[in-house]
Length: 419
Image (cartoon, rainbow, N blue to C red; front, top):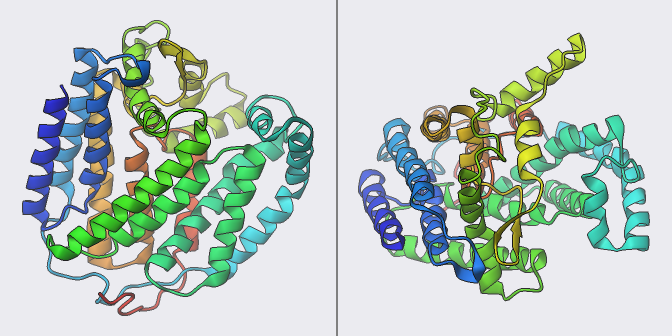
């Protein structure tokens, strides 16, 4: 199967280059990691479970349909260099700074609680307190605010700061805000993913900020991009699985979801595969806020889609001798929870169509809000090899604050960056 994946990767690279005149496109961001790590998963490296033919069929369906739908929805080869034209570019800086300062003040008691936990039990303990029902770190409504509204403000700020850096627009205080936000969220909730997220936002903003022709410049930029991605991934995975050899850790982290997906498909009752959610997972960023509002107003005994998915995937499962995995199921599990195998097609159409339409909207209207949403979606597509980032209700707050912060009084911003 590894040769099948490599053949598909080469085919997609060639077709994309000929259709668009570049390989810096969303479908490549998805196809490269999916083909590489799905192919490596067939080798059983590091004692990981080897996916079955059925699992590979699901994976290939997603890759191929995403590419097909992206080719259908996206803007074809275009001549405009978007960075040498007028762009409606203006962030609402006063609102951004005010929102961040209020968020920092809100987080002070939680930071103090986190410091107390780390002082007594070590940094590794903070993550356990962050995601259990205990109120020692933060509880009740404060926890809801921190993991939805504050997260939305922080993540949107990081994205906008990285876009400014990529466009060489000097906003030092915005950059400082972004760094502080990453430090706070990492310290309080014990995760390290925000660091990788910041780096990937910058890389994608830089790579997608202009049309890059396939020539020597592309090779140079691709080399820098790949080196940066490799270094950031090395740092993150090393921190995540510091006790293992780096290469094995990298393969385990990114190929592991395919082994876990195979385990899921072979245990349909454990993972409730026959009880469909009928689109509630794929459109979780829309359905979950509505569900929560209805539940609050009418005291309905209903649950959000991520509740049903988390109760199945949060426990650790053995996906190889001595190898335990949870949570990271790729985007395929939420999709098949909605409509079974057909859900893969529905999900791929949604993601590819969304990215293609955002690309067209930005090229047509040249508003920075579309570019911000586009880069955020590129990151979601990249992260699809691990999980579905639009599943839960906090994701809608990220989208909300991206739109809110980047739709100020517009002004033309010419020649953001010269080649």
